[in-house]
Length: 96
Image 1 (cartoon, helix red, strand yellow):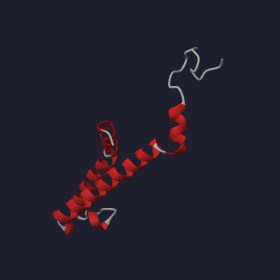
Image 2: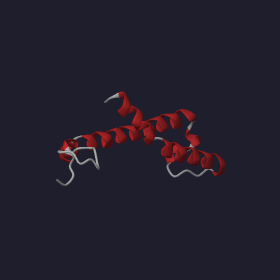
Image 3: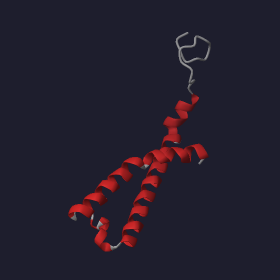
């Protein structure tokens, strides 16, 4: 993976981080969380391990989706196409 592709993986995390913040805030205020492993009563160490594991799994899933979009027959077909539109030169992909 290139530095650019790793940088794009940061777009995977904002929504899960926001969701986690809301869940933990709600868990702290009324004691309810959707998953038992997110209960603050289990200790901050357990919570930290689970949060890091969840975020790691999300980044790994994002990397797999990104890699899958860059390989396979569909990606190879799109690499062969011209990326310029509207030009009238030969090989532009437009009507002759």
